[in-house]
Amino acid sequence: MLEANNAFNSAHNHQHCVSDALSSAKALCRSQGQRLTPIRELVLRLVWQSHKPLGAYELLPQLAQAGFNSAPPTVYRALDFLQELGLIHRISSMNAFIGCTQPNHPHPTAFMICRACRTAAELDTSELETLFHLSAAKQGFDIEQQSVELLGLCVQCRETR
Amino acid sequence: MLEANNAFNSAHNHQHCVSDALSSAKALCRSQGQRLTPIRELVLRLVWQSHKPLGAYELLPQLAQAGFNSAPPTVYRALDFLQELGLIHRISSMNAFIGCTQPNHPHPTAFMICRACRTAAELDTSELETLFHLSAAKQGFDIEQQSVELLGLCVQCRETR
DNA sequence: ATTGCACTGTTATAATATAACAATTCTTCG
DNA sequence: CGAAGAATTGTTATATTATAACAGTGCAAT
Figure (spheres, rainbow over the protein chains, first blue to last red):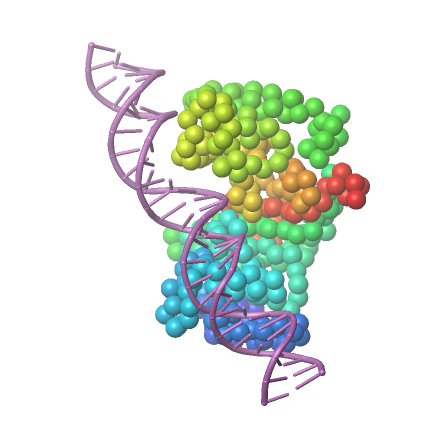
């Protein structure tokens, strides 16, 4: 069921997304000798509560509600940790964070972000990478890291109007 | 002399960049019935002082030095105005602004940003656009606006090391 | 001339992110 | 075990980026 896994399909089984993300995270941490502490795990869960990018300051009250310390450094540290492991990504055009769907396969990322429902989904850019690098190379530029954020309308929102 | 026009070539005649930008801006404003007031023109000049994206708060003291009012709203208003006309772009991964090299040809933008010298240059994505749209369309997504920011090393910086 | 509108000035504050150092907990190795 | 060292978390303060809200000013067109 490929379509059922699409973030833009609001009927998808989101529990799967969350549990997959959590087990990937645990495996990754183990293999890298890193600790997925309670705070880090909770922040990861919170980021994964939906496919909408969330700001750090939206997470803070939720951390507090869960009985955790809640000051900006706490959440930013956890976010930094998760980012470094590739478990979440930062959407810089929104100052927000979103769970990574492929933490096991390090990959250049590109996001489609619906301006109506705010849902964000990763775009498979495997076919685009070569072209990107070739185009950049024409001006002597060597790409090391990319931030691709595409704003538009998802299927559901387009059909709703 | 195409190469001489490359932002990554520090030997290029930057006065040309600035004067081109200014005359394009004037023409564009005229044709759109907009006013390029002294503040707006100065902010455009300041953004164009180099090919390195500049933050709003880096412009403020320079505005002050030029004898202008200098409070955040002043510079942000000018930046917003220039952005709406497509005369400058915002690099969201850096919270910074850079002059647009093609204000007369509205275009989807992509930037290459050198992590060493901080110079940013637009990448020609004409060949990539179709692929982008096709890839997104596979998931039913309709791209309206894009932010592509590629971090890496430019020729000069690569050769310097 | 005067009315309306765009632009600018000014003050305050919101939103996002980090610095710096103290306290705690975890680990590991003697 | 128990102490030393390292990683993690707590806490306070502050830096950085951006906007709200309203008052004043000047241009523009009837």
